[in-house]
Amino acid sequence: MDPVKSLVTDLVSRLGTHRENLLPVLQGVVEQQQYLSEYAMIKVAEAMNLSAAEVYGTATFYSFLENKKMGQYIIRVCKTITCSMKGKQQILSAIEEMLKIQIGETTPDGVFTLLQTNCLGWCHKGPAMLVNDEVYSDLTPEKVRDILQSYLKTAKS
Image: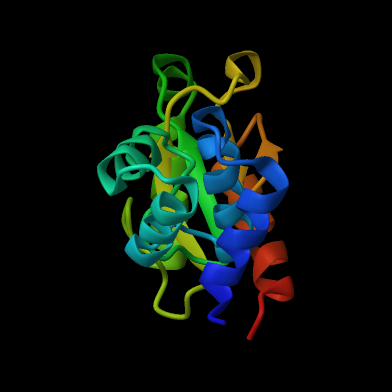
């Protein structure tokens, strides 16, 4: 059995086929696969007896359910007005300069993907960013470079 179909089958058997379980199933796929491929969305639709359009609509509505292959580390920089006023652009510039990528791109080695996102809930300590599930706040360009260097040291080769 192919790994995606097996993963979806396992998630649906544990979580159930009710419509309210769609989001947890999609989150489970992303947790294991790092993104939702078109194939995975079709398998979820089949396993849950939902239309592919319904699964796709849900998957593309939520910003943390990526539908394209991402890097090992997904950097999400907060784009709220508060973080902008506290230096978000300098943070983005430092990341783009260090990694040689722009917003929406992944490094050629597949280690980092750079995205912007809505509020991370850290406005009082902005600018803020999320690297996978780890929040970093009170950022400066120097602090960002140190953070990314530590991820580079542990990146899968």
